[in-house]
Amino acid sequence: MIIGETYLSRITLCFPKSMQMSDDEFFDFAQENPDLKMERDRFHHVILMALTGGKTGNRNAEITAELTLWNRVAQLGVVFDSSTGFRLPNGAVRSPDAAFVTTQRWNALTDEQQTKFPPLCPDFVVELMSTSDDLADADAKMQEYLENGARLGWLLSPKTAEACIYKQNEQTRVVRGFTQSLSGDDVLPNFTLDLNILR
Image (tube, rainbow, N blue to C red; front, side, top):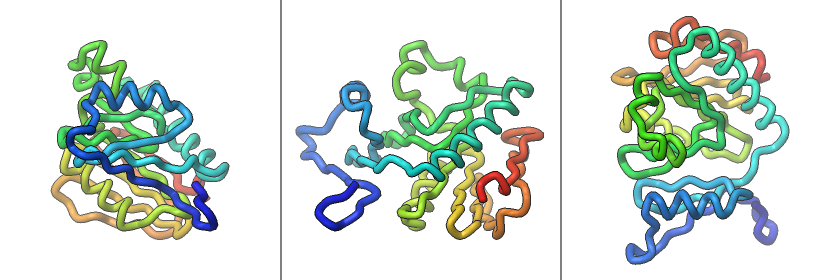
């Protein structure tokens, strides 16, 4: 987003408590504004984010395609792309660039819950950083996923060729250089992502 001569990757809108939207109202608000990519933090601040550029969009498509192809064989759950919002246990609505939820957890939701913002944190999440993204903000978001139940998360930065791996009860591990593959471990059995596709 460009305001004057300043480029902004996101804008945060803060509302008085008396004007904060309920979960259903926020879902309806998002549906009425399909051209805007938005999230909501745990304080009910609405975050408007810029659309991604071509390179980031292509990289994101590659990640989602690899995850989808793996799941078609494994049949262990449901894969989601970057346009899906999840209502986390802390009240935030987040939209990871790619996500996976096990079949058992997905089927435990009602049809309405599956149709709107699913009220759960995915088991696996990917955040793909664009050149304008802030590392501290991205790390905070990954920590939020873990605090809300994610078992595995990857924060990928093509600009620095670094992959940060987040797991429950483990220290964040950094893989430098996009010359190897990441493993889905026990969360995504036999899934690997060749980081070369993101170079």
